[in-house]
Length: 179
Ligand code: AMP
Image (cartoon, rainbow, N blue to C red):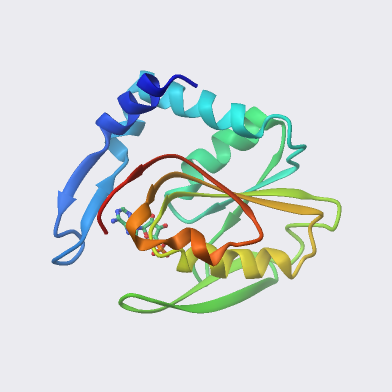
């Protein structure tokens, strides 16, 4: 994928200072999603990254990970699995509680969502500290998939979230400096 195209998408991301709390530079990707050219460039770039990996399930993390999780699943000929906040999934789940910057959070996945034959791509919009994805990875790994990959649209490099995944291939389309 041409660098200019990725730079075009990056230019569409809106920075919101002090949201949701003072001191956070919130990267608002909705402005990159609403531009049709930017949306198509992201779809093509992400498809290109994973089209030869034999992905059978894409796991999207609630809520912003659902957007591209579902698009990517369809593009890759894979199934889509939602990883949700507590109490939302109707059947039997497994769950994990983890510590975030501002208190604890819990995520859940259906216990039959993934099988040992699956090659899983886990997706969220943005990698910050990596805490959410690390908890999600723990959950998915309890189901023993054949292989796991991790992808984000963008990454806040200074937070070094990648360090939490030394044994997994992690990709993002572009990054931002700062926290
Ligand atoms: P993490 O610290 O990697 O666990 O981030 C958790 C979630 O919060 C990710 O799914 C992101 O969507 C969101 N998030 C964290 N920091 C930011 C930020 N600066 N801008 C936009 N989204 C963020």
